[in-house]
Length: 144
Image (cartoon, rainbow, N blue to C red; front, side, top):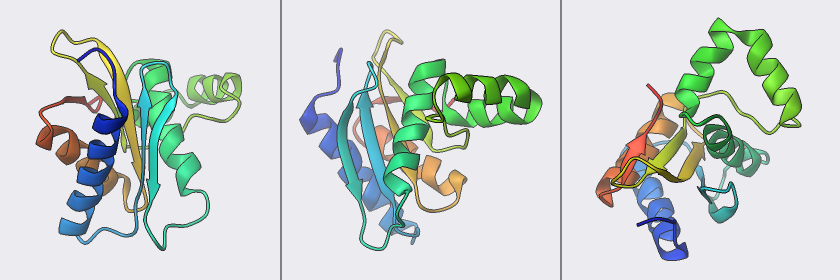
């Protein structure tokens, strides 16, 4: 696979929401982007709050923009807040430095997209992303 198809993106979303239900997570929002940062799929569960779509997209987009999962970006924000602040200014505020944005890699290690999830704690969000990708045999890179 060299790209994320609509079918794959919808399956990632569906499986992430299923993992969330298994974990009794708060209402989730799941965004799947292709390697170019274009939105392929977005689903928001009933009861998810107003900004959740933008947050999910921001987690996935940030992972793609910086080439590492949003957990690593969150760590960078703690270690180098001025740098992440400057990057977020360059990104016009689109970067969300919190776990839940996971890169999707192909069998050769090339980035083919990203998934971003929000709604529960960042650790639960990330767990839903990892579980969804694993269930489909896709290679997840959370940036640990």
